[in-house]
Length: 264
Image (tube, rainbow, N blue to C red; front, top):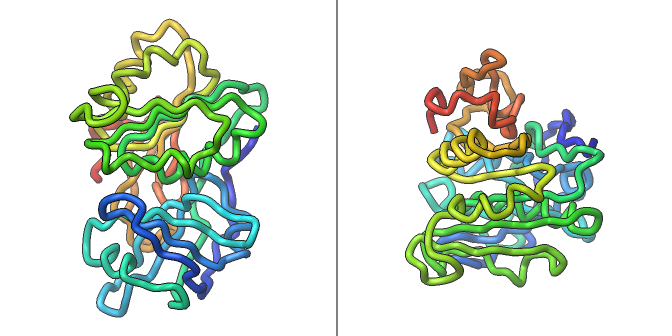
C-alpha cells in the first residue's frame, strides 16, 4: 500500500519562491521547503501563520512539490488570513508547521484510480495525480462553478484522462462533477474525492446504488485550531468514534463519516 501517513510534524521558517494568481482569487504559492517537500504526501496539509493580527494559523493543503525542493500551495482567498497570504511576494518568509495529518492511501493492487475534484478540491488531488500518473491509470473528474474557476489543464500531468464540468456550462459538460461519476465507477479500483459537503453526500448516494463495491477516500475541511491534535477543536463524530480531523484525517473513508455530524 502507498500510505499517506507521516508523523514528522515540525516548525519551519521558509522563503516564498513564487506567487501567481492562476484562477480568479486563487494563488499558486511556492515555498523553498526541502524538508517538507521531501516527506509530504498527497492529502496532507501545513499550518501557516498569516500575520501578527491573526492568532490562529491557517490550514492549507499541499498542492505539489518540485525537484528543486519547493512545496506548492493553492490558496483560495476566502478571508483575512488567506488574503494576507496571497499578498506575500517572493523573498518573504513564513512560519509553517507540517506536514500534518494523514493523506490518501493507494492500495498495492489498485491500477485504475478515479479522482473527483469539486472546486478547490483540486488542490490535493492534482498532487495525487502527479504522484500516481507514472504508475497508474488516472481519471480526473474536475468541476467548478464556471470556466474561470477551473484549474488550468496545462498544469496537470499529460498522461491522465481529464473530464471537466461547470455548473453554468461555460466549459466541459454542464452540471455537477458527480453527474458524470457513474460513467467511470465500473472501471475504478479506488476513488479519491475532495470538495464541498454536498458533493460528498451525492457520492455517498451514488455508492449505495453502485453495483461495484469500492472504497472512497475523502478529504475533510473543517475549522482547526492548533492543527497538531492538541486542542480537539476539529473533532468529529464518526462510525469509528470521535476523530480529530487534523491528526486522524483530513483523509477518511467516506463510509466511516457521519456527514450530517460534520460542521465546516
